[in-house]
Length: 357
Ligand SMILES: Nc1ncnc2c1ncn2[C@@H]1O[C@H](COP(=O)(O)OP(=O)(O)OP(=O)(O)O)[C@@H](O)[C@H]1O
Ligand SMILES: [Mg+2]
Image 1 (cartoon, rainbow, N blue to C red):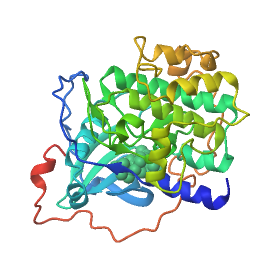
Image 2 (image 1 turned 135 degrees about the vertical axis):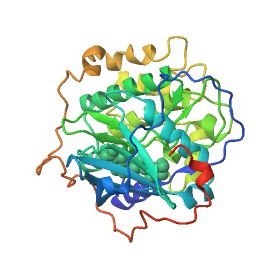
Image 3 (image 1 turned 90 degrees about the horizontal axis):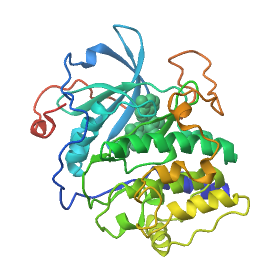
């Protein structure tokens, strides 16, 4: 694969698709019954806004510093008009609600939210080590044990979410951050949804989307296990299995379902991937009667001591070179900064859509 292809792939990676939910399942919440209403609300004056760490379809994520305790945080800012225009009101409220209640060593922690008349703000821990995406592109591909380590931490995070009836729906290396010790933190709950039966929305990132999502069949947690397969493939190969120049061509490949495994893939990983990247839901690992246990018990993961991994009691394969302490952001790509309208007061036609923020 040449550089141009990689660049295209990088661009395609950043594109997401989303459509309005066609139907909504009636769900009885399985989440920890904690209040999701922030007690002490934050305001913009509590933070000094610093550089941009990432940009997305609705706004950007900034490094910020608390003026009270001098600690660094990341704030995701979403422009209300863009959220409304792209019909993502429900997804955005879901994102906030999911982030507020999840508690897991490999999931990002959110501290609170607030809003002004134009923007929504979500305050999270700042994760210094950058995106797994950047590390993967720099390394081209990961050796088998390295890919296995990250995949295993992802399995535990997905298992936790699924236990709480949350589908994540946007697994990809850009949404996996590395903390200062090299453990993963999954961020971006923009498509996460609490679902106790099935859902239909077309969303995700083309290379990672499962066939049942493309054909808008009802689907459930199985889509995350498909994406896990794509993630493991990409970590080991350096490219995704259904990569093509346009999302449409990628979808065609996904529906066709042919995966060409590089010859350096070991037989046990090919076995695992052929049971994850499989359209037949009655055969996809993770979606069978033993759930995630089938994945954790697969021979490719045989060396993993799951309890120790969960306790972060396993040495990480890579320690991010964080030179200048806690607020170091040298491991993040640079983005052009723009004039910020944060703190706007005045008319807010969208107030009624975001009452929880
Ligand atoms: N807590 C965090 N600490 C450090 N960097 C972060 C954090 N959260 C997000 N980022 C950076 O910002 C980028 C964009 O954030 P995120 O993925 O949440 O937004 P997005 O992709 O724009 O979301 P959406 O899917 O809603 O469009 C991430 O890929 C990551 O590089
Ligand atoms: Mg993202």
